[in-house]
Image 1 (spheres, rainbow, N blue to C red):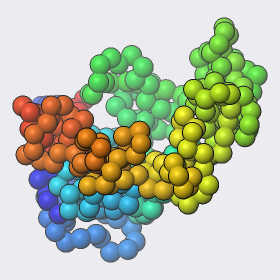
Image 2 (cartoon, helix red, strand yellow):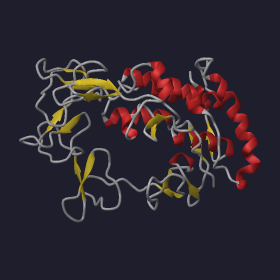
Image 3 (cartoon, rainbow, N blue to C red):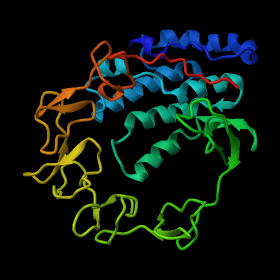
Image 4 (tube, rainbow, N blue to C red):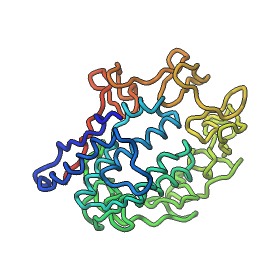
Amino acid sequence: MQNHSRSFSLPRITTRLALRLSALLLLAAPLAACGDEGPAPPGPIPLDALRDELALATCEQHVRCGLSPDKATCEATQGDAQSTLQLLTDAVLGRVTYDPAAGRTCVEAVRAYACDTRASALKGSSDACAGMFVGTVPEGDACLLAEECAGDSFCDTSMCTGDGVCCLGACTKRPALVAVGGDCTTNPCVASAYCDQAEMPFTCKARGGNGDACDGVDQCKDGMRCDVGGNPQTCYLLQNRGGQCNPSLKQGACFRFDDYCHPTDRKCVQLPKDGEPCTDDNKCLQYSFCDAGTCKRLAIEGEACTDDGDCLGTLRCNEMVCTMRASNEVCAF
């Protein structure tokens, strides 16, 4: 594995945190070596191995779900998420506590993620990682991430503008969910409902079932989608790979994000990959784009680009060349 994507330099650390820098460097030292050793043995994952374990699991999932063409390319183009680096730093600073057993649970959930757009799948993956970092920051104190907040509070960063990087929020008690028929002007609805904003006050309404009328993509039950733009606009069931589907549905008929409804077979099949003809509406697997009717891999490090969207993984377009973003985005307090 190429370690340059996960170098653990911390240029934003200020003098206020200088006394803790030695601890951070101790954490960084083993991370640089473990990429060449492969995954940690089964069982709880030590904090100093978590970063590479997450990277390996993420690349396995990305290849399986069409987000990267192969493992080697993924490892060369997928850097750390800023939140991952921040939480690793937070664990050393005591802003969160890390549970090695929960770390293993999270890593395996990332590895096994089913390329699925349904809310239940997304929630299952999120829940599997929820216990990995437990916040210690009390309600009312400054925070950067939800994981930093203790108890049932979250990090309210609603006052932040722009990209929000390093903008401090405050740990705030989670708002109560609103039942069907209630006012959702300020609080979110329960999972079985959506917030109808057609008129004031906004109202939580039950999500529709198969065949029910709708006019927004969030108005149907999990595993369904609203055919916005269709005639009529109704909720319809999404299909798994190999399932019968209707290619005329405007919003797509398959629940896997790497599938589409084949226009002649009328079944959910994988989107075309690099070198294959694009779909009729110029779609390809997410690691590629449609170029004159043929899917072409996005640019890797060192290849030409015009903006970030031309580059694969977490590469950035810097001076017209795809470049690995330095893994140094750690915010100081």
